[in-house]
Image 1 (cartoon, one colour):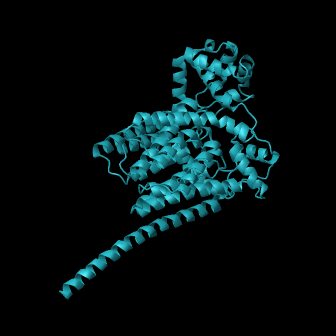
Image 2 (cartoon, one colour; image 1 turned 30 degrees about the horizontal axis):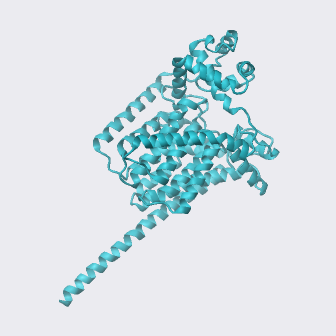
Image 3 (cartoon, one colour; image 1 turned 45 degrees about the vertical axis):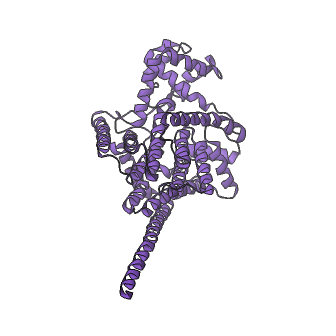
Length: 491
């Protein structure tokens, strides 16, 4: 009896110790992932110090020094920069440090949560994704896009620490996530399309029983957020209006005139449209040529005289209603350019940047040692693997395989996939340029969605369909890279 009792007690105690060791091991794996991410953050800061000051960075820093802000560049970012500048931290370094710590901090928490679930290999892939040159190469440039990506990555990391295990966030964590999502939305106009689905999925969860109602609610929330941005920027943050909102109507009017003929926009004489066509100013790639006084600025000047103030919006809407097919063809062509679907490998705005914009404000460039890394980033970004449309297809595949989610990992995967999908689709309506940096968050979110989905069990037939769809998109992109000549740089 006593012997049996002893063996039973020993077995129970051994199982008890095993149950205790498992959580300890999980915590160690999570801590290991966090430590590796901290090391990668330190390497990034040291290697790229003090960050790359782009043209936009120089303009914003001029505003910081002058203490006068407009809404062409995000006043929330400029105000924060001015605050750090006032504390004695000069140059672009404070904003560089901020966006790098947010970026790696979010990836650290995401990888740590996966490692804690026993997905150590997947956690490692998360960190490798963060070090992928097309993403990291743009993240080291002090830009609103990098600030947005850093803030969104941090918000996802904080929330996923609990959500991947299907746990509710503590109140303080939910508040921090909202602050990060709010900052991301303020520093980039289109961030609302990324941040709103993140807020719903990470903080409230999805209503799988009422998907149509959920979709309407998300779209209404995005519209409400977009409607609040201008009052916040101009009234709360005291930014002077710059006319940035006119770029979309001007770009679309030029596209409609290009496809439907000069008579579609009679406010501009036909000879001016013909001159712009001859100079290649009416391109779906970006709006810059018609906004450049040295190129085709006469188009903008003529339209501003013919349709001052809010009249331009009315003219824009009337042209869309009158020539819907030309408008649709113009927007589809632009979205194709943005997503780099049927486009050549060599395109302007792919980057990433190798040095700071020349300036007299004391904004230096990193050491020349970064040149090789940035060239590799350009090569990969120009390849089929770097095409935003491929990552968009991955996000669609993840959504197809994991909807409706039944657990925390599935819900996080769906949320990240929807963030990518809405972000990238929005460029079809509001995009005016095809810069690669616009897609950094969408690609990062798609990669994280895929990695989160490895913790789910999708139906095999769904996985097969998703893989075939992604392969088809990849084949189109590869064919385009092989057959199309390089795109001409903007005027």
